[in-house]
Length: 270
Length: 87
Image (spheres, rainbow over the protein chains, first blue to last red):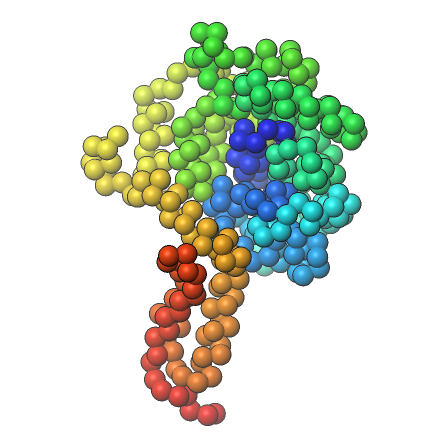
C-alpha cells in the first residue's frame, strides 16, 4: 500500500483493508514499513501491546512470532509494528524481502486453532520514494496506490506508478480516497474518470470522505467493522475485490438515510 | 449532537480518547520504551521486590511520567506484610 505523497490515507487504508480481509475469513498480517514513524499501531488501537518490532526481528533480537500482535477484535488479523527509534536505514530491501517470505511461510495456531499460514501480507509503505519505499515494495507481489483527488497527490501517484513498473510491479491498482461526490458533481473536484484517465491504471475502489474516519482513528477502531459507515463499506468492497470477487462500485450519490445516519452516530458516540 | 450525548449518557468524546492515547504513546516514544516492555519491567519488579517484602500485586502501578520535560518512571507498590518468611 503506497502513495508517494504523505497524508492521503495509506495507513488508514492498510488498517481497514486488513480488517476487512480478516472479516472475510482470511488470515492477514499488516506490516508497518514506516520505520522511525510508526503509526499503523495507533490507527489499529494496538499501541499498548507492542513489545518487539520489525527491526528487532531483522536484527535477530526476537523471533518473528514474538513481534506479531494479534488483534482481538478482528479474528485472524495480526500486526508487525515498525520500530519507532530507528530510521529507514536500519533495514535494506533484501532483509525486507526475506522477512516477507518468512511471514508467508509462517504457520500460526493456538489451543483452539490448527496452525495456518497467512493468506495476505499487507505492507504499509512510508511516503516518499527513497529507501523506506524501496524496502516496502521489495517483498511485494502486488501494489495498491492510494491517492486523493488533488493535483499533488495524483502527480505523486503517477511518479510511483513509474517506479513500480521499473521494479517489475506491473498493473498497480488505484484506491481513490476522500472523494467528495458533491464537489465532483459541481465540477470543483476531479472525479473517478478524470483520475483513471490521467493515471491509466486499474481502479480498485473509491472511498468517500467520511467524518467517521476521524472518530474511528481517535478511538483506534477501524471503520471497516462498522456496518453503517460508508467508508467502512467502501473498504469492505475493496477487500472483496482483492480476493477476486467482482463487486460493483458503491453508489456514492445516494444520501444516507436518517436511520443510517442515526446508527452511525450512536455507534461511534455510544 | 451534544443534547443527544446528554440524553443517551454517551461515553467519552472520541477526541478525549485520542488525546489520552496520544499522550501515552508520546511518553513511551520519548522514553524509547514500548508499552509491552513496560509491562515486562513491571513483572520483573514484582519478582525482585517480592524477594524482600510481601506486596499486593494487583495494586501495583508503573507509569512513565513527564513533568517540565523531566522524564521519570514512577512505581507505586503497595506493601502488605514485612519481609517474607524464608521457606
